[in-house]
Image (tube, rainbow, N blue to C red):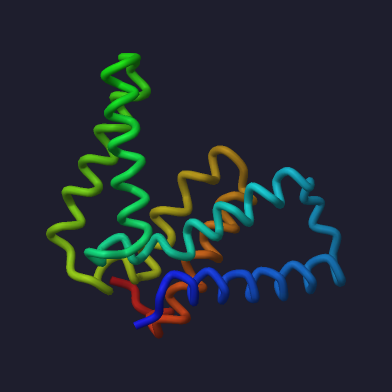
Length: 146
């Protein structure tokens, strides 16, 4: 079983090679800010499929964000904090019923979790999808659809 460090390292190698090729042959026109944010999103998405593993770093991170958003909502009740807290609670609740290397290790999940970022910036969606794909490739699940 690959750890989160392996997934992060494999994404860094993969995205470095891909960006070198992109910049050598084309001018992708990515701003420095978009590049930094996009690579960061890709790093996050490179460990996201392991959310269904009970002791994964990403699950611990989600739990920490959930607790923080809950505390912030109690102190500063706003709709957006309630929405974030509710979504995280629902998401974490679902992970108890999904087996490891199940749905979250599929191309379908990669697409479903990457597409919402397209609304913000298409490059963010691109980096997220590549982060997810690098995880699937390392785990040998690159061609799993469901």
